[in-house]
Length: 308
Image (cartoon, rainbow, N blue to C red):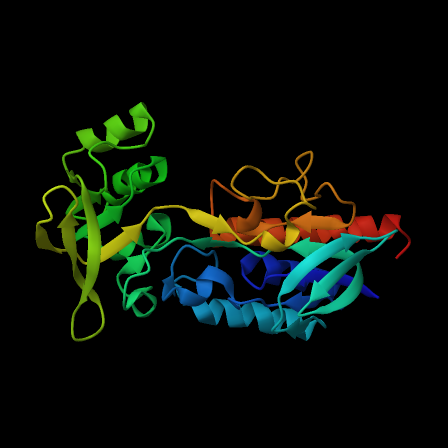
């Protein structure tokens, strides 16, 4: 019987691991298919407190993991397939085997949607990203583009005008899906130019493997063209990694977990949610870390109430 199992090894999961390990629970951390979460694909992180010159994303993740291991956290390259509620415990199916735990912290994150084009994986962090707040400041006085037509795409485009010389908003339709006030704000900005009825059909990289532009295809005319940009911001949504919990934990219509009463507790006693798996608004490393801390403290109090 485990005391605490943590699903996910991004900022939320690793912070929960540090706190749970320091509480002498020797948590088992399941790293999943994407160890380190989205930070593992980020080059430089400049907005995580405490690092004046910034820090490499994978280095930050490894530091947090080492810190958790120092206090007794254990790690396994495993994924959760299913959960069941027991009497005072939770059964967790891990790589085909059932394990029991008193508390479960779900910090499995959310995966940004990309286009699935050739060379995409190699370009992430090298001119291809899904987070303007994270990476916008790296692209000062150069042209960039945002792919998408919803509120997030428009908000990211407006945010990027603080840094970029030009922001192209690429959308596959001839009008935005965003709410009117958000769309109007984006379209009225002098730095933002919409490219209607268009899709990115190819990424164009330079000899160093950095983004230099994209190839566009107009869906109405079929015409192709090249657009010179230094970064592509993909804003077509995220998918929470919650498949293993469907039908068991309360979720919204998009699959994000719904904690109860302002805490990290879910509808099943002993199960807590932290990070991007339950965050549709902020999606930042520091907010995920904060929720990881909260989940660990909530789990600790729950275990104390159970006499564990």
